[in-house]
Image (cartoon, rainbow, N blue to C red; front, side, top):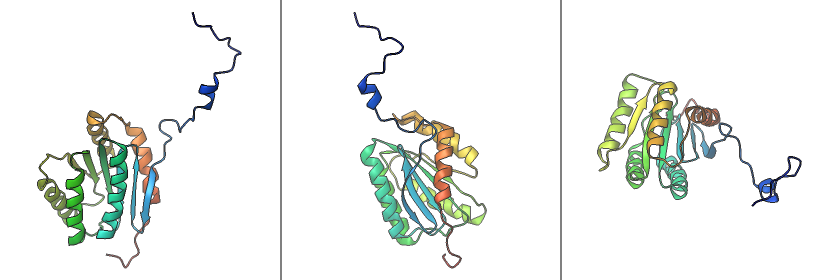
Length: 192
């Protein structure tokens, strides 16, 4: 029969030396790249992209390194894309790189949530691009665009948790996205 500890007895050495991470809801995103108008990072198995500038091949290369890091650490992941303002559509070369990257990680991607901060012709053009990315994949990809964070969060959490061994909560995701968003730099007025 195991011996009972008295209330004044200290915890075992093993328990006392266990590292303690941040409490749930206090986690920070890992920001891998901050470029003028762009932030790439991840939190758990969620890739975070913040765009306020035009995507080019160099930026897509940085994004692919972040996605590779998450893919090596997790069997699957979700993606959250936040757009700031009306950043120009990706260059033709960047569009091709996005297509290749999307195809490479399609089997591991649970869902992609895209927040479009603007509307009108620009949003229609972005939606057309997203549809073309989705159409070129053999797998039915879960991609959805939103006009508010309040709509994006619940869909992302529900979609992610349905297939991920690492569940997330809406309040945690909102907190992490807010921290990542704070790192985004505004593009120079001359960039387009």
